Length: 117
Image 1 (cartoon, rainbow, N blue to C red):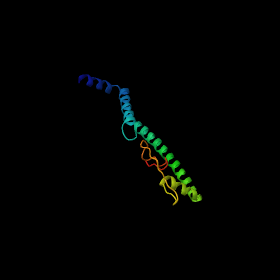
Image 2: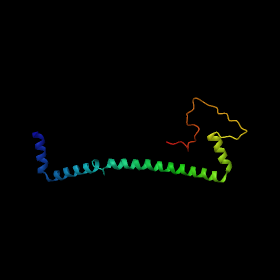
Image 3: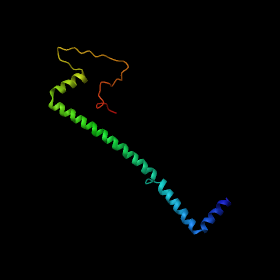
Image 4: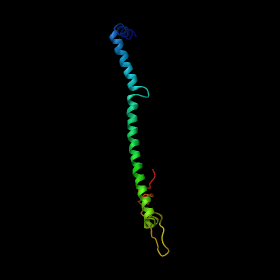
């Protein structure tokens, strides 16, 4: 205990060491503690990058969906193709055979654009 006291007294009596100690403590508090610290700043930058990637993914999905909607509006054969492929609809004179593969995932009937995370 006496060594700590002697070090503190030594620092207290040297003016430049007081200011140096206060500056070091201040930088440590600003840099590593609180909500505006360097660590929280880095976390926020990482979160922003992740959200920007997610925004780009949703914009791509939106563009794909809009292309498909325009195709459905302008091409009546597209609606028939989608009904046949995805929903196994048929005309009266057709028979549909669905071949199953047990090793396949259960959601493989959906395209990548239709899968919901």
